[in-house]
Length: 223
Image (cartoon, rainbow, N blue to C red; front, side, top):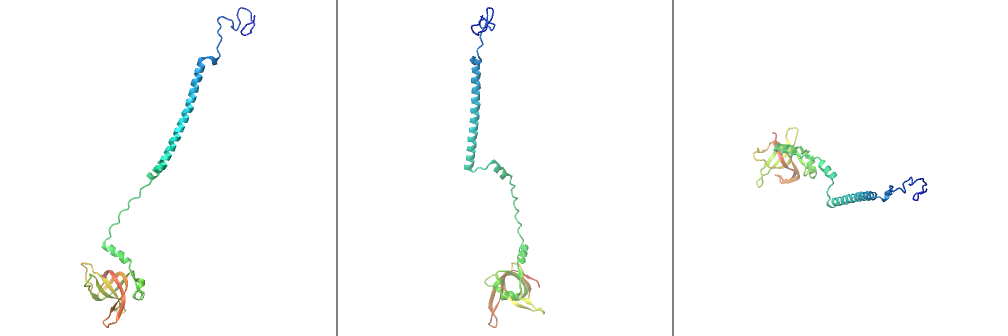
């Protein structure tokens, strides 16, 4: 006998494959089962959700990065690296103020700036030394006290010969500090001051005498 469904020949009442058996139920293909399509739909939804989520996160990250960069450029806000670099700079220590100098130190500094000059040099080239700080040692040969100012005028001879006589006068203006000793004729002094060029005056014989002039800052009596 031949099975009408599968074409198998057999002997007996039923096809050995069970095609015509009253207890046989043919199996449905897997693609015709309902749960197969449920799984397919769930997998598809999961894949779509994953891809869409990644795209959204990436787009959001890019937008946020662009917004931050644009904001930094517009506001000139320093980046974390720049802030860290600025913070790490060691502040320079504050300089301590220099102590105020005493009058003796001020005098010492001024004297150090004064230059010893030969009388012939300053008499011959007064304009060359005008405005410079100079110093001389000499003998007071004349004192004229100031009537209209606090400064006195002295004629001081600054060249000593081999016999102890002094010559070559310089006209010196000087204001004696309050409380200091008076400077008298024949005192041996050292004076420090600014050369003011030359000055001229009439001698007792009526002739014009031109000599170097100095505005003294300090005069020390040495003898």
